[in-house]
Length: 145
Image (cartoon, one colour):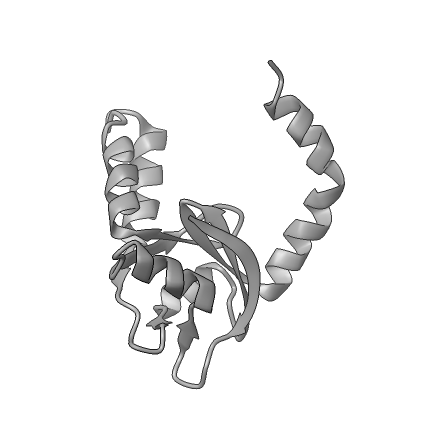
């Protein structure tokens, strides 16, 4: 559903504008509300409400008697915030999420099919630079039949 890589900036008021393509997809799929939370690899995860509910169901099914499950769920859900883009497609990211992802001004917004990832530009460049050379090796391991 969400695909591509887009460079954007946080404005003076701390808002982030979603890429036009993502706004079009949202409108076509009647998505009005998103959830943003701490992601992996120092980025933020952003899900449509429907996708968020599906992910939430999976994580709630993990036994809370397991320490790792409790820790993950605490960090994941305590970081979550509901956002509704304004008419210009802007969302306001809380400071604690920007701090987590080390976002200052320049960001990269990445479509990863069922979710959107929001990266500090520097962190994305580090991740991409360190991962692109192993892309084929990873593909071979994941695609083994």
